[in-house]
Image (cartoon, rainbow, N blue to C red; front, top):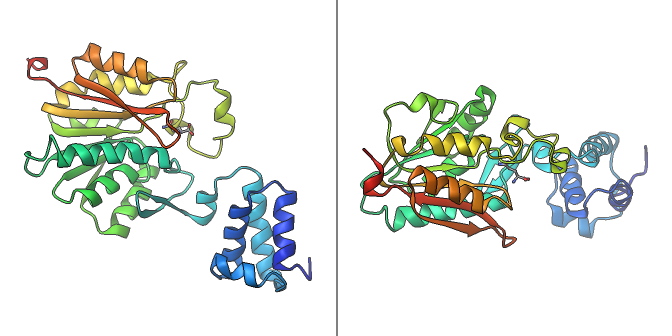
Length: 282
Ligand code: GLN
């Protein structure tokens, strides 16, 4: 294709159903210019290499691949994390979990010196790194069952120079005998067979789907949480839009106190958590 201008490139994106902002970001990338440059230069003609690079990435985006995988990066809680298809794309909704964790570390857990925090199923390392970044005195450990995800998390640890310990573990399995003051997780929680999974087909299935009701991973985490938490220690879990009551009930049955839920940016109850009361441990 020749004579393809900046304006044409954006029209082409619309024809393929690609969101305008995403198209601008891909085009700016192909041209190695800031996005704002496009507005004043819509008559500029792309060369063959730029046209090819842009159309290739536009096709990927049009097929539903997340923008974050195409550009290799996603901002989460102020950190530009490396991502690829081995990890879930960090969501803004998950910042609710991080904000809650930081509130606890500055509030009820502030008296604990060098609090021990664990992120179960860390993926890119998003939650663990954001918590460490916001609470530098915390000792943060992050686990994942996927070796490929841990490679991404390791590069993110290096990218930010933050001291986060990474470990290969399926939930608590490799953490026998270890206790924490705060456990966090954004586990898979989508029900198998949920139509929404089709939209998420580019992301790792193991990070998304969890049994017929989507609660399998949460049940596994909750089942062994108390033996890995100190008295007064908290467990915070992200979950699906309609799972707050079920997750709260699982926490109550396991012996947690102070159970409550937090809303995400859309106003949906997205995280639930509680703490270990003195009576819960034998
Ligand atoms: N929040 C994601 C979605 O529904 C799912 C993430 C997860 O299962 N942890 O798009």
